[in-house]
Image 1: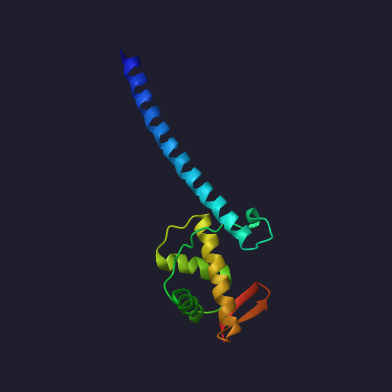
Image 2 (image 1 turned 135 degrees about the horizontal axis):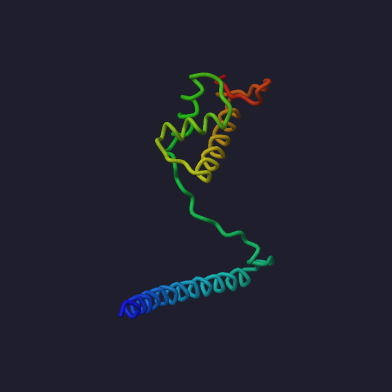
Amino acid sequence: MGQSIVIHGLIKKRAEIAGLHKAAQKAADTIKDDLAAIDRALALCGYQDDPKGIAPRGKYKQLFGRNELKLLTRERLREGPADDETIAAWIIERKGWDADDTLRADVLKRARDALQREQKVGRVVQDFGPDGCLWRLA
């Protein structure tokens, strides 16, 4: 008796998942057809390269508001010189995020980019000392 209830539940769950799989395959086929249509349109417009060589793009995940990262890096550097990893960790802590490795790497890359942009306009400078690269306000 107990096994038949389990089997019935598993059959019901498998049917549900199979339905989801079928819907996902249909959506994937639609996307594949759209790509083929765009590839044909590119060829008609004279595109010579292989369209499959065009790198797929992901959605941009907006973590910061306008100028927020720039202002946060400056605020941290007002406390004293710091390396980019320290600045990124401070920003994560300041925002109150529970950061995994992926988020830490993303914030570190964005902080480095922001620091380099600030360096180009002369707001921050890089100091190379015995501890490595430190950023400070100009």
